[in-house]
Figure 1 (tube, rainbow, N blue to C red):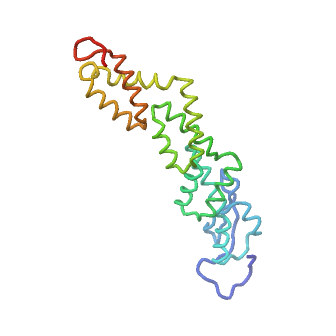
Figure 2: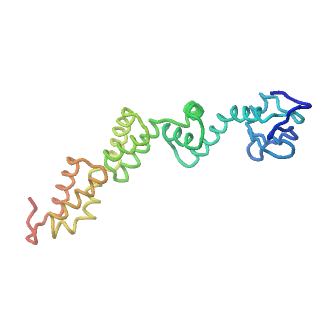
Figure 3: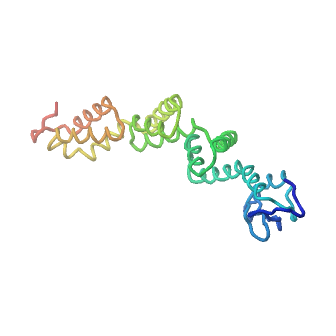
Length: 237
């Protein structure tokens, strides 16, 4: 890689390093200027290992090899920017890096690096996601489907649903909360047209991922709370 002096057969893209500049605000990246232009942006560690210095002649092939060596560091930088927006599963992170053009091996290396730092943790991600969605009124089936879509392993999902479900139920009384919300939304219709209201409530809960046993309990609780039939004032069966 250390090529300097006269090149008898220069090719397009070859050039001489005219400056090495630390990136403003990004101390671990270096702008490599060739003949006054800046075609390379490399990790400082890559620059150091390659022994780059002003006056060094770099062929186009050498530049390509440097960019290949820099790919893992670019992937790590991009992964940190992605985590700045929100937490992600390992599968999501690898998929986003692959979509950004990184090779599978590079993307997987970045995921391993993040996991080693504790920045990625599928168990933590799954439990936090499940708790937030269950508290927002999602049923377990829907949460399970979404976590599966995000690439979480079955055992990770099962642990998250059990832990999150218990925590939310203990903190808020999940079924009581769902019944109260259903009563607010459908209570008036239950009083006037219970059969239609029951169908609408069942469909509403099914779309949110509740199973039929859970739906049945909620429907019975709402009917009991409303406690009226077709204008007779009698409890509903």
